[in-house]
Length: 331
Image 1 (spheres, helix red, strand yellow):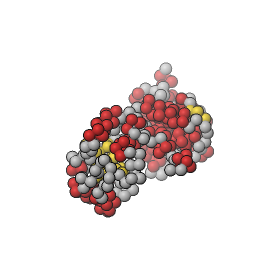
Image 2 (tube, helix red, strand yellow):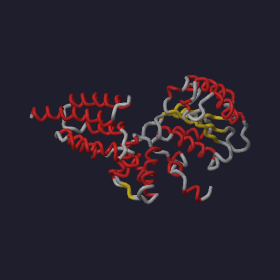
Image 3 (tube, one colour):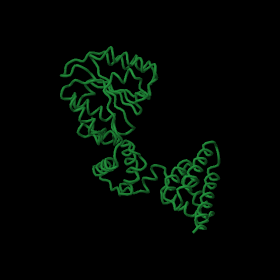
Image 4 (cartoon, helix red, strand yellow):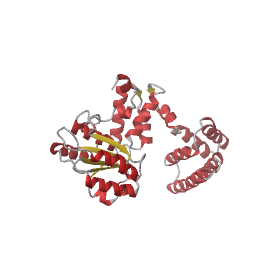
């Protein structure tokens, strides 16, 4: 691989774990896989868990530890994404063709096929895959990665050792982002790290992609840069609009809202999501907050059905002002 290829790799690939020791926060899974490596008695495996927690990366790291650094080039390992090719023909052609070939040389007498996003396979394709697993288990082991294990038919699950990947903790994601930032000589402030974590919802892949996108704008990354990359509204801007509405300054609240929609080009659905997050911090009773959340859901639905974003959002702000007025009068 040339130096140019290395330096232009997406960071999710550049910083992908090379061995099982590098995988973040999946201790139970990693311990089990290391025990399997010791005996080389590798079963078919199902890696289940939410997106971005390391299922695909762990499969690659396992194969590298088993076969060596040239595990792909030497033909011992192949990855197929079932979300791209989810039909029965993929199983009959690509999967069966790879599985039936007898490995030559090496200490391990079988190859590994990773079927990523396997929960996207049709039912017919899954039944065909089950038969391939039965026919070629002597020459090939299969690793299935799935976000939703309940979408994998029972006959396949019963033939696999199931490993469940848990969501990554905040400290794990922020720690990894900090480490990558150091390698890339970036300055990332704490507010930016918090924002990346908040919007990536435990998805390490998305967090790393967000960091790389932000780095393309500036080597000094703050909260504002992250919001801009994500196309989200900053908490300060939304809080300002809500507070203006609660104080009865509708003209100013409307002007700030129009800036978000028509100047920054933000989607109404993103503004609704930002308002939802801020509602919990408003000085209102729990009962009023519940009523406003219900109304916000109605606003979101109406916009999805074609309602004018500004009108719908201003209607919500008007209701918020009415609630706030009742609170102030009560005091």
